[in-house]
Structure formats: structure tokens, C-alpha cells
Length: 186
Image (cartoon, rainbow, N blue to C red; front, top):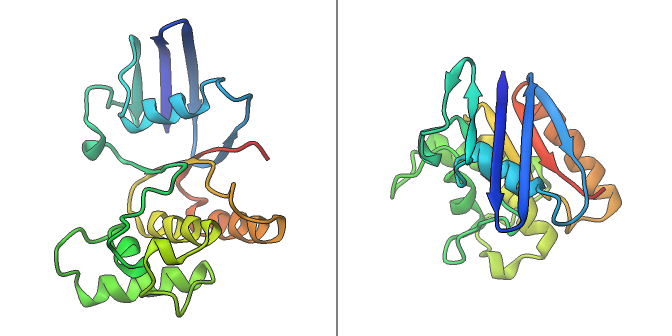
């Protein structure tokens, strides 16, 4: 279970307070621009330290842990794809960060690309993909991640309504047993 216990963060004249617990499943975070949705994800992922309070995962205080030492995968608004890598290389980073990924990791990455309807586009670089295709590459990488908590910041903003619903269904099918926080305006 993910808990934000008496969290308070202040940046200039903006203050965010949070005190809640979330079990496994998908939770949508909805609110106005500037309301603190992305800030909340940054707190959970460890990119932002609260002024007070704690981030707790399964009864362990992870507040002092850096992002890499947290059970959290983050999909940023800009998808955070490496422009010099192919779609396949970007996706395989979800399970294998080595310079030469294992054959099994590459196979899983190809399967993940197929899940998001990008089979055959493995060798394209992000610049050769549409915005919606880039967001699906990032989603495929997130699906492969073994992290228990998934933070998604506007993951489907670049998708049309039909494809957005498909990706939501896919996310529920493949990430629904994890704790998922998803910022959305939709």
C-alpha cells in the first residue's frame, strides 16, 4: 500500500498538502492546471522532497530514498524517450539497462511494442514517430517495468479518443495489480 502521510511541500506561493493511502489498482488524479498533480507524482517518485511528511510503501518510509531506490516507475508528460535510441531500445530499458540487452529482454520489449500496436516500428527513432506513437513506446516501457508503483503524467494526451480507450484497457490489463497514479485532464 502506498501512503502519503501528512505531506506538505511549498514552492514559492504554492503549497500542496496530501494525506491518503492507496491500495493496488488505478487511481486517476484530476484537477486544474497548476493544481499540483505533477508535483504529487514527483513526490511519490522521489524527484521532489517534501517540506514535511512521509512517503510510505508497504510500511517502509521511502521518503529519504532517491528515485532509483524506490519501487516507482515514472512516465513523464514528454515520454522521456532517448532520441538516439530506437523504439525497441527505448522499451527494453524498462527491464534491461545494460549496453547489450539479453535476448529475452529484447523479445519481451518486442511483445510490449506489439501490445501497444507498434509492431514493425521497432527500429524507428522517436523523431520518426508521431506524438501518439511516442507515448505508446513510453507506455510499453512502463508495462515492462517491474516496479510496484507506476506514476503516469498525462500518458494519453497525444492520443485520439478510440486509441486512448484501447490504451486504458491495456493499462488496466497489464498494470491493474500494481499501484498506479495517473494524472489526466480527461
